[in-house]
Structures are given as structure tokens and as C-alpha cells.
Image (cartoon, rainbow, N blue to C red; front, side, top):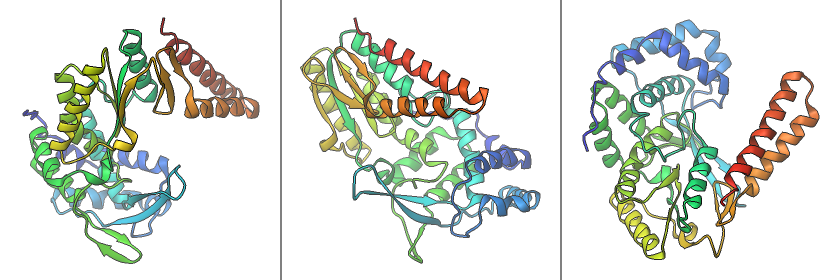
Length: 335
């Protein structure tokens, strides 16, 4: 499906110092770890005008070269398991945060309305409400899926081809493809990469959504309301046969993208007979409960309420508690 449009001005916008400055503000607010050059946000900010001008000039001349990524391992919730991040330099983060801003603006209306991760103004609560609506409509058979190594397994050729279909801006495509292929520095050695998008780059989430759009589209085209949050997804049907058909359709669609379903975290069943946990929420035919993540949010909100020192902090904590109560009251009422 050809998704090109009038995107030819995106790269020129990226080159504007004012645009790069706005991207810098987002990067600075997060105050993330430094990349391979060991430069932090404070050091970069000490010569901000000079550094922004240097980036803008390299982009205008189309000579900008992303640096290798600094490889870092962080523990997962599962004991003994680690997630490997690729940390860009501050200046690369500024550039690719800017690219992300431009792509979000250009593509936001094209993504599936049931894809909820890494998009502005939607999130986990919206995904859970969508599940609740399906359960309320009498769809009790579930297909729950997990994509094995989502970020790490994306095929560069498929991603580049999809990028070409969606983005009619050659300099920007070239820059993104260079960012995809940078090596990593691990234990003092530079190691090439051959697939995947680096977890830690501002570009990776939107590129993962782009890659999986074909999966979203195929499921929706076959009348399976796929609710996806990154690599975690679920669809609900009215019968076991429909659920089995949905699973086969999902498996085939992902296979064409050269990625696999994680069978240990995926399966078919009836919400009338068992519950599932999706995005930290417990779901069955009677409603949606907070689940582990939801109860942790309640605990944090209560703690914030007790420790509030200002009226603003008190208002925020009360607002979070009221929001959680309202959400579970509405989502949990199936009848």
C-alpha cells in the first residue's frame, strides 16, 4: 500500500535551528544518560547555540553522521533477565527526537486507531477501555499475543522498503537509514548490528509502529479488532473458531514480517473460563480489575497524597486517585 504524501519539506524543517532547539528542550527535560562521547545534557547546554548551529549546518549540507551507540544492559522484572539498550549521544538524540516529532505529525492519522503505544495523547488506559468495550459487546474469546524480541528482530530491508512507501523525502529517509545501521560500543569494542531498532533511540518506537502497521492492517482487514501496545496485543471474538482463525491470521502476518509470536506468552481462551493479564490489568468476562500495575498506581497515588507538601501536589494526587477510581468503575462494569 503506497502511503506517500507531500512530505518533501520535512527535512528542511529538521535543519532549522529553532526546530532543533525545541527538540533539545525535550531531550534536556529527560536528562538521560550520555552516549559514547560521555557528554551529558549539562555539558552540551554549556555551549548550546554553538552546538545547535553545528548540527544544523551538518544537516543542511547532508553530511551529518550518527555516532555509534553505547550499549547498556538493564535488568528486566524477570529475575536474571536483561534488556540491552543502545544509548545515542546527546546531539544524535536531539536530531532523532526532531525526526520523531516530524514523523509523528505526518503519520499520526495513518496508524491503526487500535495501536496505542508510543503515540501522543493515548496510552494504556485507552487500550484497556478498547478491550472493555469489546467485552461489553459480548466478545469473550480472546487471542493474546506477544511478539518475540520486537525491537531487536525487525528486518532492515523490510523496514527500509516500508519507509520508502511512507516517506517521500529522500534526505530524511537517508538519515533514518543511517541511524538504523549504526554499530554499538560494548566493553570497549565496536560491534556491527544486522537487524533491529535500538532500544534507547527516540526514533525506535515510531519505526516499530511503522513496521507493525502491516500486521495491524491485516488483522483489521479480516475484521479482527487488534488492540496493540508495542509488542503486546490482544483481539477478542465471539467464538472459539473465530479466535483460532484470528491466531492463524496473526501468525501468518507476522511471519511475512520475519518476526515470530512468543508462544510462551500467547494463546487462545475464553474469558468466561479464565482471566488474562493485559498491560498489567486483569481481564475476564465480569470486568477489568487493576491487576499488579494498577494496584501499584493506586499505592503511588496514595503515597503521593500522604506526602503532598503543596496544594498543587495535593491536587495532582487527588486527581490521579479519582481518575483511577473512575477508570476501573467504568471499565469493570460489563453488564
